[in-house]
Amino acid sequence: MHKVNDMNEKRKYRRVIFYTEADYGFNGKITDISLGGAYIETYTPLPEKSIINVKFQFPEGKDLVLKAVVKSSKQGMGMGIEFIELKEDDEAALLDFINAN
Image: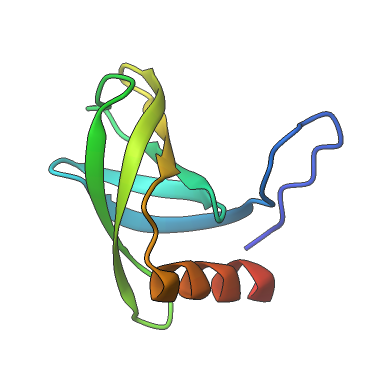
């Protein structure tokens, strides 16, 4: 996994490259993740403002199911999501993973 370090990019949270299967009612693949959200490559992105529960697994085997809102969507390509209503233990798991990568 690699850090995404684009000096021109203004993001609230540091992102890391992370590839894992994602289930949000359809199948996709997370390609990067941060404490604030993730990008899911999928042929079936949902419309912006859709609320989803996305399930994925960290490499060490921990399953997460996080509530998110679709912030950007491009048909046939994917969607950017923002995590919402994070539980404290889920936030800690995300932060630990991101800091380790």
